[in-house]
Image (cartoon, rainbow, N blue to C red; front, side, top):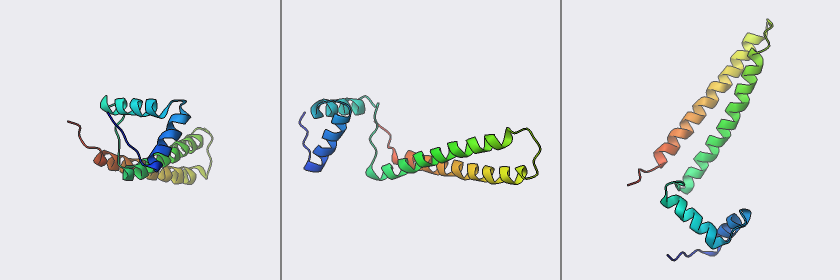
Length: 114
């Protein structure tokens, strides 16, 4: 099999291979096999934006869940707790909605493999 790359693609390939201590040919071969074995499913360039949003939303969701747990684990009655808990809960629900929307977008991007 012959592969050809333009200069920019070759630089990306060399950087990726260098990060893993491999030759560019070995790294490319490993990626080709991963795709052939359906271990790695390539996505379009546009899906990269969606995946970045999904990752950001998941990070935000984790932080919000930690804050919500901290508010509810005090065990002491606090007059400000219900309002604060409601605000954190709204943040958590917003983050969940973002994760769901991003996940749906990624799923629409994927094509069934034959």
